[in-house]
Image (tube, rainbow, N blue to C red):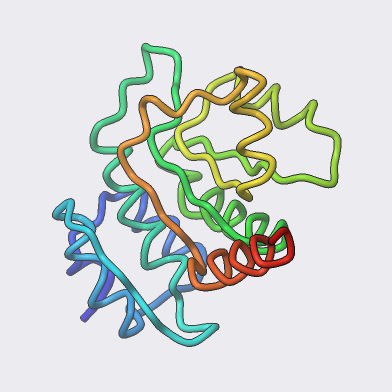
Length: 172
């Protein structure tokens, strides 16, 4: 099977070629058709098997197919990641795969000045990749409005849950 057989939009396929992807990995082959059909997917695979592309490609495809460049962009997809390093890596994938589709993504995480993150959100983005802490901060400040979100990805959800549970147990 090839990526073109997955029936991804032409701008997405162009980015896949530019990133030197040739054939879908098993997680991509199994997940992408279901995600393109709008179904929920729980995917588990080892590091380095292409999980990010397995969810990023269909998200970009769907956003591209439903794009309305005339209106101000409100985030329509949210990817939560447990660490700033993973969030930055996922954000880079969305930028690379979305470059020809006109999809704008931003990454928000703590430990850095929030000014550029706020500016990106105010300018309008299609995808927000965030760590939970900074996302909650920006929501409380009224900067990040998630009412238009129709796609949610919990990347490494097991790590976020483990972290939340250890934080809760320390407070007890």
